[in-house]
Image (cartoon, rainbow, N blue to C red; front, side, top):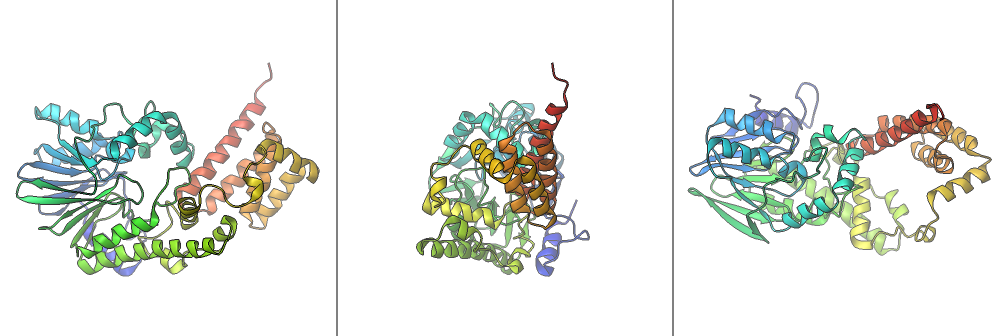
Length: 438
């Protein structure tokens, strides 16, 4: 059993994450006791479990693939049935594992746990069902274009993004809900940030906070390029509200638990400050009439901030958050008149190829830009060539190589995944071009 608190103390206090400390986000599906009657099962999305006089109160169920492994870990820890299941929010990797909790209840001959969450979880689940194919597609792309059924992160399986038998919220609330469990009260506080259905839980007599995805040990996931609107300023407010409680133990749904009032305050306020500064700088430029293009290439987060072990851009990244700030305050149009009602990509690529002397010229220049280290320009040019001749195997050989090399230079999982998916798309074209013609 790992000493997760000692690990997090070392990483936060020294600012160093290395092979000697181990990762901050582990997918071991192992249970570690954090305090008396309190444990965390580390998974793609953790499950925080608390033994009470009424039963086991669990915060999040992990995903459909990992849910059974989480339940297995809980059963090895205690025979106490799960009495309460609190969803911190409705993402599939947090609620998709709930059928495993129902199966465990049936095996023990006890009722399903009481499921508590924000009132917006139900419409989120319905939206996922309405866009099932789309969600499976974009999540596969986000994580590199690999087969959907192998995605731990999706929460669902190869047939459903959200399992059809996911446990629905039975007790919902809007702003705040006080849940009484045995001799304890748990304050559930709604706050928008990564989602509009998020909550964080405060246990006053224990001075514990269950933070859900408000803390993920990475730069906040406030800019995901394929997902619905995020709310960075409101996210920062939630973090400051948590810090104001002076918690002594903070349990996130991703990454390591943190103890110590001062240490927790530093982490929460550092993350809040990074988000607040980003929003402020973007709004200053927007108010001066700047375009999105200008803002993206002007606003950044200082490297010393990004070097903090809980703010590294290893999943989402600040540039994507800038896009979401623009979308939140300024709409979807980026300010370039030609992109208000653009030509189809295929027509644009064909014209660019014609003007430049053909797709081979574009490919050669893209490879030159790549050699010079301008990965952004190389990708623009190779996409023009691929749009102009979408089944040209030579073009896609170059495109696959360019996106593989660009992927290798990126830090964030989202960038790596999308660029890997682009390379896979081109490999599929190459394979088709090599098949015998009928």
